[in-house]
Length: 548
Image (cartoon, rainbow, N blue to C red):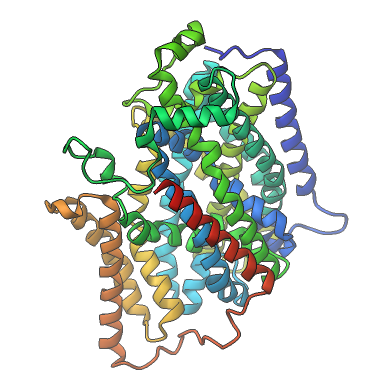
């Protein structure tokens, strides 16, 4: 199946690829008389403006996980999956106001570096290894797999070849140019990402309405599947049967429970996200970029979740399916294969626009791969290589090691990615298994930032014990803990308790010498940031009141 790709679709896609590679390689070039140093490669010379930071945050975040995985979850369970996006908008504001001032003041390259300054080298190394395994075996592999699945479904290319092609595309500019190449190409990637996503949403809703437009299509989708438009899921269906989706999104607890763990960990302490904020010209510039990303987060469900819901209505409407003809019968998404929803929709786009939409999908995949590769190489180089292998490495050696370690991580991910085949709703898989390590990391960072009594030994024990705690909660036969978000939330609370108790036993209530001094003006923000944050919160309140 080639999804009816015509010459103009290939022209659009090839033009996109040439543009990205051209810009990436151009900004990667060594300036006359200047050898690229570690700050250039890993932090883009600390020169990123706010609009590049904001768009790069979204490009790094939105990937096949959202376009394919979240659209599949929209098909399977509806708009409730959008909580990941809308709550992220509020989380970004929290990160901008309370975390960034401390990180930027300390001049960090990596998040593990903060752990070393606040606690110890030993704990930094433990967390660095945690992250390296997480990025390579969960993040990189899942993005490659979902991207390969999309290309296989849309163009008929064998999945392994598609995975290799995506990997080579991302590596072509990101491994050579570092964060600067990643961030500046992300600005272009976001334009394709949003434009292509909006085109697909328009097509899906227009098709549902029989050509009567987007608003008519949205009304029909709402009327045909009202159960798909609840942000807060009930534990039981109207007929008294258990709601199987409740285990993934447990009602109001999504808003006040475990999802906060996933969000704060991801946006506040995740290297491949926070790295571009550390590369800002200044703290104010970084906070403005965070605010832009928060606004963009509000519209993401429109381009990734709504198409999945529209696909659900389409495949369950005999009249619509008949109008789609033979093409509509190919690779039809189902409850068991929900992740096929977005690729299935793309085949119905007209010539030219299909190339734009496919370029958007590729942009989402490649930009995230590039960001993950850059951050994986940053952590390995700065926190492992320079710490234990070659402490005196010069800038040239450091940059070359960064490129080599990124390439090795990519090869491993390419080999592992096909093993995910046959798994449905991969987005949920990513969240669930990241949840095994995020509680301990989040506990260490929150207490390290805001509780001066936290000691190094207590933090190490808290981080190490959090994994068996999370695993124990996962397999305990307690019905109330069946939703993995509950397990993640409780694991975080227990990890915090472990760290606080051990810290108190060690210091008898005294402050730790490395505790962070919170000054009065540290969290002061500009009127622009304050007003923007208020508007984001207001819009979130309106959205949840409409779709409760």
